[in-house]
Amino acid sequence: MNKKLKITILAILGIFLLYVLASLFFGNDNIEEESAIIEKNEVINEYTPLEEITEEQNRQTLVELFYKDKNTGDVKSETRRIDSKNLLKEPYKFLVELLIDAPENAELENLIPEGTRVISAKMKGNILELNLSKEFIDNHKGTKEEEEKTIKSIVNTLTELNEVGSVKILIDGKTDKEFKDGEVNFKEAFKRK
Image (cartoon, rainbow, N blue to C red; front, side):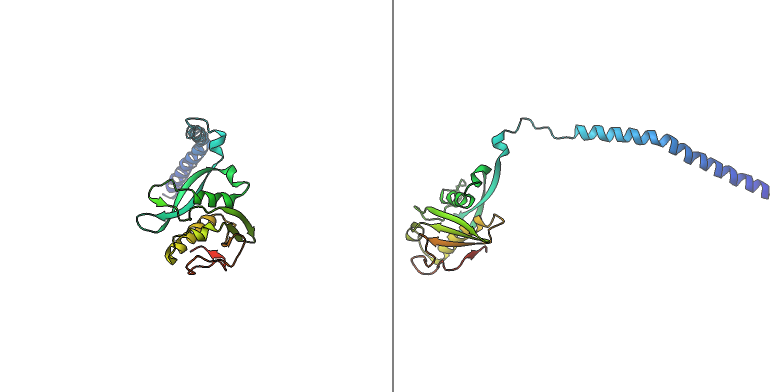
């Protein structure tokens, strides 16, 4: 019986060895076929645009501008698609000028007083010095809450740019100005809230 058991074990090992060798030898073809199928699928799954992207479309970028929501009174963002070349020369001035213009969304309203002009906008370290015309304080509607929303609108818009940590507001080049009611002054730089 020992001899029969040994022969049976050797036969099972032989069959197992043949199976392993056969799967290794014939399995390579399956792997190559699967690789070819995967490569084919990769080509098929590639995105093909329905139309060519124009140079103008390629230059566009999104910016966040902050306005007042007419319904809630909160400061909310409006995403605007612009040509990125507008941000090359004077990006900070350009963004504030967009804020001065009316929002595209009818549910939002501008917080910057009418007649305000951007005189200059320059980075000093991570502080942006924003020099506005006197109309910014002369034409403001007042109330501390509205003044704070106006500042938040400007600061949130400009701090969307990574390099801007805070915004120092100057009026006609002077740092010691404040809104007419004296509630909010411009002595310190404003940080995002």
